[in-house]
Amino acid sequence: MATALDEPTELGYQCPKGHKWDALTWSEFKEHSWCYICKLDYPSKDCPKQRVCWMSDEQWDLVNKSLPFKPIIIEGIQHFPDCKIPHK
Image (tube, rainbow, N blue to C red; front, side, top):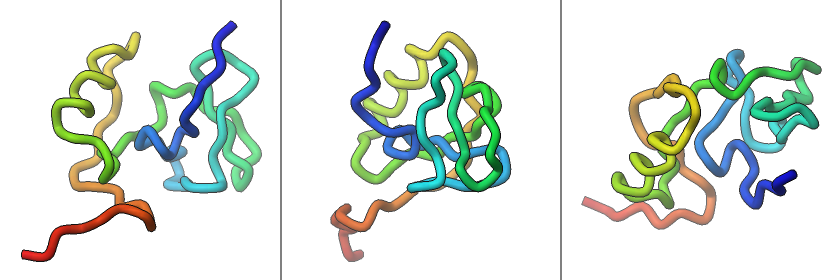
């Protein structure tokens, strides 16, 4: 048994209905996420992902290549409150 150190949203996941942040946590079932709002378990392969602002493109690619399934990717970047966004 393994213990996840990052919550699903910290890795870019959201439930299929779009809920994230505190609404999503890891399920007791392998490779599933639990949505508190939907009150449902979702297989991680059905949960779309969006690159989080703290991950570089290389880290993002490595994480997604290590998954046992092809993730559903949402374009753009998911910003966390503590991320520094460079001004252009």
